[in-house]
Length: 240
Image 1 (cartoon, one colour):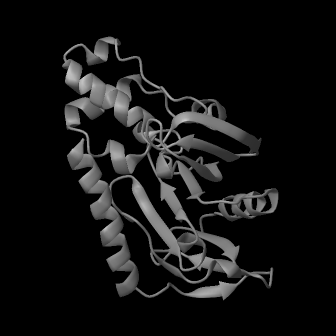
Image 2 (cartoon, helix red, strand yellow; image 1 turned 90 degrees about the horizontal axis):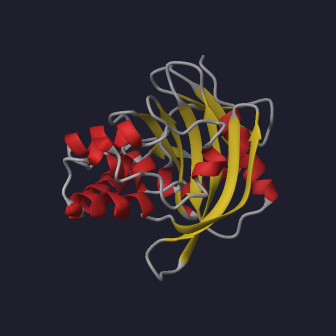
Image 3 (cartoon, one colour; image 1 turned 180 degrees about the vertical axis):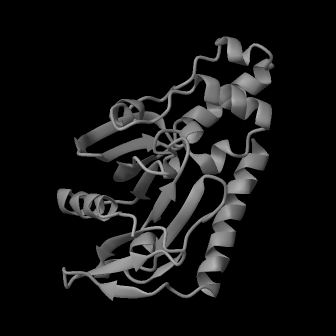
């Protein structure tokens, strides 16, 4: 699991370097004078976001594997952890271990291929209908399932630890579904007997070549107005 932590730290460092090296893509005002339009440089999608979010930069692990694009905001993303708009394909992943480490591609991707295959056989995929339930759970795997029969006790313990990473004893304060978008606010301990972290955001499930568009951040405080603003950002996503 040490390699997984190192891989995650490397992603964050590389994202910071990329952000310094890359300028923001062209922006233009939307009908809302307080909003801007982000247009993907490859013309795959666009979305609107508040002017107060700042300028856009290349986000963490953008373009790697199923993380099609990650967009970091110069103000919003620096006012806490995460806060990047992320377009994904394949299995839906949640940033910042919002449902534990196994639902976070940046962490699950560090597993050996055989273990990752076994996990994906057992792990319930995130959907619009079950996201509120799954983010409220600390455990998401039955480690006695046949798919894990070849794993050692050490490997099983590592999976259990990864499953609960950043998501120990979660408490969901609110979680609602509006169309294809789920908006949530929760907290959880980041380590056994450790401090708790507030995580909130919006996830839009897509019925296209992509699976989800999300904006998740860990910071305090949060209120209904901010959650609604984040919901509007992900709900504005569209293909050109």
